[in-house]
Amino acid sequence: MSLDLSVMLSDKIQAMSESATIKMAQKARELAAKGVKVISLSLGEPDFDTPQYIKDAAAEGLAKGYTKYTPVSGLAELKKAIVSKFKRENDLEYTEKDIVVSTGAKQSIANVFLSTVNPGDEVIIFAPYWVSYVELVKFCGGIPVVVGAGIDQDFKVNAQQVAAAINDKTKVIIFSSPCNPTGSLYSQEELESIAQVILPHNNLIVISDEIYEHINFVGKHASIATIPGMKEITAVVNGFSKGYSMTGWRLGYMAAPQWLAAACDKVQGQITSGASSFSQYAAAIALEGDQTPTREMTAAFLTRKKLVLELLSQIPGVKVNNPQGAFYVFPDISYYFGKSNGELTINNADDFCEIMLAEAHVGCVSGSAFGNDDCIRISYAASEENLRTAIGNLHRVLTTFK
Image 1: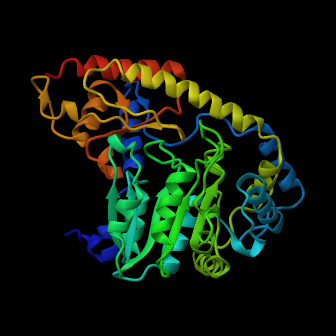
Image 2: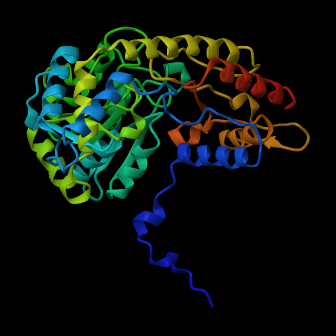
């Protein structure tokens, strides 16, 4: 008789949901393995190669012997480059003691939660949100408090909503700008109004996820940490995966008040220690080198965004805003809820994505994973040809649902 040893798993891991983006990508791969031509628009990964000067820098690092353990919080040369980056690009003054380099921005966020959240603490999460925020909070014993904004608000939470959500149990507030999954970004004025709500409270921590900073279609990036009084309570999270197309290099970083950075260093020292040494060597050169490839990639994403918005506007009932950053659109597809093609019925966004994968052979992600059940996330980190084909397939299949 076989035993079900899954009962040995911790309550925490059994309560944790699988990443919806990874799950949908896996389903697309399984269908493709059966010989079906699938166009996956589900993963948040630039389809551009890492710029050559960064790859050359990694080889140089290997040749120079950067193959050993690094300090837990990062190589001194990379931390110095990060400090310079914040000063040059964001007008933020940090020291190397305020910086912690991790194996991806996801680990940076997890480090902050593990360092600050006690069981019962509430964490305000702006929705739509990145899929891992809620699960990381729950894993730490915290209580996610989701504050949502729909397409009518450009998917951006306002100061009044934040004020209404804060109470004596609130410990952390987290949001991303530019946002995954919506591509929306907060202006300096919007951030200032939110900051004025936060600042009177002396026991709140803010996590500002700025991983898509360089994929910005409107100009200068706005960080809440630049607002007087906010830098002292804010962890600014960033990395190299999106702006430099370095997803497989697994490098992120955060800048935070020194007491919080030290705590994250302590957590990381017990879990992973330092990130890859030669990746860090190359990352320092990425920050200080020619930024032309990043600008060219952003320009290409802007062209693709315009194409995707044009194509989606031709599908009856689909509502979409005009996102100003990242490489996602988050269309409202609730018009199709309850509609059927005679065999299949779309009841919700989960059904929509499952049916579109099976019938249109297009992989996208349900908005339910991001805190909005009326929408789906489409990544346009794909070729224009694939985008035209994929959205054309969606259009063709949706015309059969009445």
